[in-house]
Length: 332
Ligand code: RIB
Image (cartoon, rainbow, N blue to C red):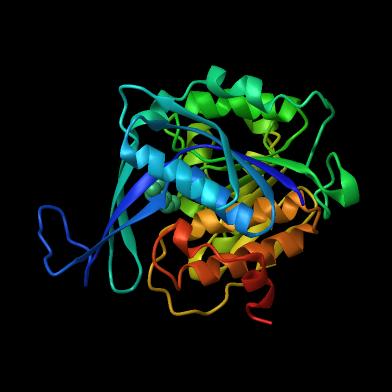
């Protein structure tokens, strides 16, 4: 069983399902309300655990019933919760979500305790005393290997404060973890070069990729022949800063993994989507779990895609994450 640590957000999702998403200033009635465990960090932790990894979550909740429920539900999903701290005087993270009949969504987050998390809350807990450089580069993911090629992966998103994420990415790299950073939502400020060169895998969508490039003061390509060429050029700018691999998710058009030596093109699977909330998190969590298991990059991409395809056929974020057996049997 590979090891995955997840450092990030923990939310409760308050979801209203409606026919169509409202426009600005508009009210849409006739909705159905449901509440689910969410937060990009916690979602990715559950996805990785259900895919078979040994997962520990590091984050913060408020001293309220939402926070207690979230810790409980992570624990029930086999995620270690010893690294979750309670921030007195803060509310737990809340996401207000609207989902339409095609499964598309709008999300607004009140970060609460997630934004109170400090590097010192986590840094002592993720020390490994192994040293070494886990590059995560090459077809097998390379990097430091444990028993049977397993590796320790540190998985980050962007729903806690960016400076906290940046500090802990640099630490995780120096501790020997393979660092995977899902840059969602897009960074709000320039990312330090030391952070990029400490990151083995960036996972982003096209919008987040453009934002990363713009924040680095790069000039995006003026004329690209086609969409893939444009993505390759943008990814190349991130790779030139020392990132090991860039994975760009393209929704129903699949995804691309780009590094200095190769491009892996991953096709999507056709399913009837009812709720896409957490699908990106499912991809990231299962990718990290597969990487930690020592699987080839092409296999990590395929497993992550199959898992995300299953997740969009179910309601909720953490409640939609598939088991290892479901991932193995899907599409075969
Ligand atoms: O990625 C989906 C998640 O984003 C939701 O679970 C919500 O909590 C927001 O953080």
